[in-house]
Image (tube, rainbow, N blue to C red; front, side, top):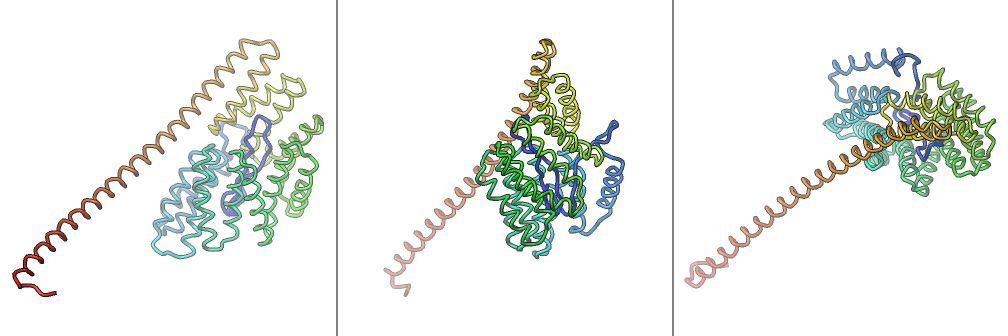
Amino acid sequence: MKLKVAKINDSLKKNISLSLTMIRSCFTILFFGLFLIITNLSFGQIAVIDSLEKQIETEVIVGEKVKLLNKLCEQYQSSDYKKSLKHAKEALALSEQISKKNKAKKALISQSANNVGAGYLLLDNYEKSQKYLLMALKIAEEIKDTSRMSNAAYNLGLVYDYKGNKALALKYVERSIELDEKSGDLEAAVYGYSSLSADYFFDHEYNKGMVYYAKAMKIIDEINKPGLKAVLYENRAVGLKYENRYIEALKYHEKAIAIDIKLNNTASLETNYLNVADLYMVMNNNKKAIEYNNKSLEIALKLKSIKTIMKAYSGLAESYEQMGKTDLAYKNILLYANWKDSLYRQENATVMAEMQTKYETDKKEAENTLLVAENELDKAELDKKSIQQKMLLTLLGLVTF
């Protein structure tokens, strides 16, 4: 996730037509990709992951181990969201154990909390994502770390966007851009411009979207980042679709996909294929829509991206129904329903776990309150006895005050 510290690719998950934006992680830019064999990790990534895991095993300095865990987290952001979150949590727990209470420690905590928030964001758990991103932002503000402030603010913008709070989403993205421009980090500002362009495209305000698209593209051409260019192409394709300019939209989708395949950008391809499938459905080309829904589904199943899986099955069911293949339409509707039930159980389990934690916390607090009350009563009783004794002794002339 964009942690100017590392930036990750994600999509605005609003409906089947998704406009791309990015989540930011830490220090390096990371784009998702698909290696066209049996794994969604490239050989290069596998080598990097193996190297990081070996370094983590032998590293004895806690701060250095935290940095390595965050790097490992970022590597898995393109292939396994749950593993990415697991390593981010490990990094956060370790960073909080560092004995020295200095700026370096807080920077590591902020970075790790941002990665945890990003991990939950990828897994569609917006409440937990918001909690950790706010934590990352607060700590970054304490140490006046502009880069980490920008990263957390940007990711919070995504969270609020997904939750439907457009005003807060805009506020945080604009703050992120302001911080990036102030620090001269034009590459990071691209993410903000891209996000704003995507939102305007999605809201059918193509001309406004093109203003931010042009700003972002100008910077991308200067810094030569093809991965970012793919994101901009995908955003524009969605905007063109809403303008009913389908052939132009398809052209920009194809440009984005070509770059993503070259760079092995798995998560981007997952969303891009879904967008193309949706475009072909609008164009009444169900055969092509089925082809691209299946491409998206293949990646989503590997990434365990439940909402994308559901959207792909829903799209497949609709195409088969329009083609008169009711048996296949029914099969895909059942698959959609099964995954929807799975998502409900997952979300319900999270809610139940949080309720249990709250219950345990409240119970503990109640016990502590009761203990304090009992102590106060005991103290009051002792004070009462002491006063009674003093009064008795006074009457006997044995105590002076």
